[in-house]
Every structure is written in structure tokens, then in C-alpha cells.
Image (cartoon, rainbow, N blue to C red):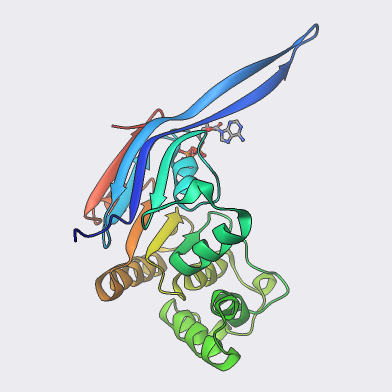
Length: 233
Ligand SMILES: Nc1ncnc2c1ncn2[C@@H]1O[C@H](COP(=O)(O)OP(=O)(O)OP(=O)(O)O)[C@@H](O)[C@H]1O
């Protein structure tokens, strides 16, 4: 049997219909953000997505991460047509297979760093003790062993970013999607995070899809994709 593709996108279109209210009448303006994207991702690939501001990078990442559906086209992940899943199935599928690192970290403010990172494991039914142990390990790997019990409000922006990264990786997901993961980190911590991604890629065959504006960073991935006005160029 041939190896299954991890992700398969065929002719993915995303458009927004905005109602524009002028003095006398309303009319609808359609903006096509993705104009027919075709993209296959194999298990273990490391992909950097480059493109100008507004070219559709985050939109594509959200669709790959099942946070949003395309207007038309096919998105298959592990052979599953993910656009046909209901909310519950979608949440379970994401928790099992994906780690998503957002520009804004979406941490739970009333929980500690360890609790935030342990969450995906607890949802999966891992015991408290085991989840805490794994979460602590990941936080150590991102250089936060001295901040385990701090809440997000007691952490700096870069520290929150690293908690979010640890949370996305704790499940050893098959696919990690990251929107500017090192954007607001200093050089040393950005390097830490990059190495952690690569370690995961090497050890577990985790596929990486990272949106970045950093050409030097992109060049260190084994595949670079450029989005140009809603299309892969
Ligand atoms: N809800 C929406 N309604 C209408 N247009 C939208 C909506 N969300 C995004 N867009 C438009 O889609 C385009 C692509 O946005 P996207 O965030 O994918 O770009 P990007 O390449 O990630 O940009 P950046 O590098 O600046 O983060 C933008 O021009 C944006 O204005």
C-alpha cells in the first residue's frame, strides 16, 4: 500500500462576502482570499509558508488546522474529508492529530503554565499525574522550568508564546501548524523553538507547517511555499 498523504488540498477557495452600506443602498462585495490552492503534504515534511501581508497565509493555515472551512474545494487530512465533520468530531480529530500555534496565544488565563500545557492530554483521558509530568517536560524543553506555576498574566509575551508552543507539542501531533511562532521571541529563544520543532520532526515524523516573514528561517525548512495573491506560486 502506498503511504497515505497527511494533507491533500484540491482547488481550495476561500471567499468572504461583505455587505457594503452606501448612502442609498447596500451591496455585497466578494473578496476571494484563496483562489484555488492545491497542496499535498507528506508525513514528516517541514514546510515554511512565505508571502506578502494579506496574501492568505493565515487563512490557509486556519483551513489546514480545521479552524475554518473553505468556500469550495477539498481538504483531506489522513484521508478524511475534514469539511464533512461536525463540531464534536472536528474537535476530537484536532486534539488527536494537530497542534496549532496562534499569533495570539489563546491560553486559559485562570490556569497555570503546567495546567495549560497538560490540557490536551487530560482531554484525551491521560491521568493527571502523567499529564503533569509530560507538561513539565515540555515546559523544560522551551526553557520555562522556572515558570511552571505562573498564570499567563504573570508571564511575558515571549514566555506565553513558549507555553502555547509547549501545549501544541505535548500530544506529539502528526501535524504542527504555526503562525509566526518565533515572531516575538529573541534570537536565543527563537532558536530553541526551531530546534524543538526539528527534534519533533526527526523523532516522531511530525509534519511542520510554519507561516513566517523571516526568509532566513524559511530557508532552514526542507520545503518553502510562496503564497502570492491567494495562489501558490
Ligand atoms: N473575515 C474576513 N472578511 C473579509 N476579508 C477577510 C476576512 N479575514 C481575512 N480577510 C482578508 O483576507 C486577506 C488575507 O488575510 P490573511 O490573514 O490570510 O493574510 P496573511 O497572508 O496571513 O497576512 P499577514 O502576513 O499580514 O498576517 C486579507 O486581505 C484580509 O483582509
